Length: 254
Image (cartoon, rainbow, N blue to C red; front, side, top):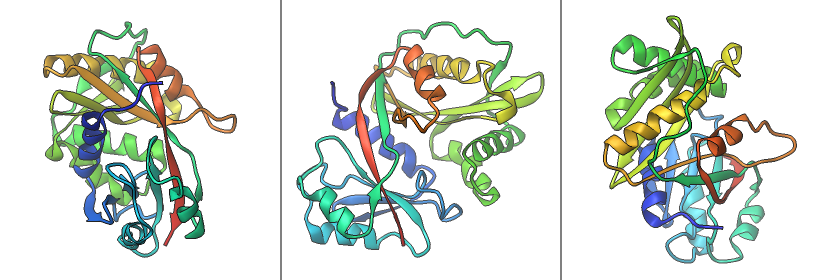
């Protein structure tokens, strides 16, 4: 199986930095969204043992940078070193959670989406608010996080809505830099699922990546597991992405 390049790993991190508080500690980046302390998706320690083998003291420094009362993930990417890293995390009370599969594709057009939904780029403040609400509801996040998500365009994200008539049904976004595009912040409201929203939004963002001069598109979603839904996973594969590998997410709470 292929692996993500340093450029591809960097674009995902920069995308998250755009709406997070980022702290460098212990050779890792600690990402926090204070409005959503119960969300390990938004509160993460990234990069442990990635550039060079981590030490136990660096693991302690990175975990200490997480604020109190936070549920978080410590991400362990494929190839993270040393081999003892997982044992160190377990000894500090963390346990294996739901890993994320990383995907890559080129910028050739995705297969056409068969949907009656209309895709529109987010421009106005009302559209930003609608985008933030769809993302927040889709992931079960607290209302307080909507303002942070609505400000994603200020950090470099480009955002879209899928509409049924004038009603927001789905949302998704793209972050591009250094010739690479990262797709994220994608969600569909429960009452609008299975209408092709994410297939259409994937196609729109891949087209934009090509227009921006990117040569690669990356994204991620929860790994395949029998006890977890896989609609996003299937949509990504149908859009022409190839699996790269699973980033392990070790879950902890301060």
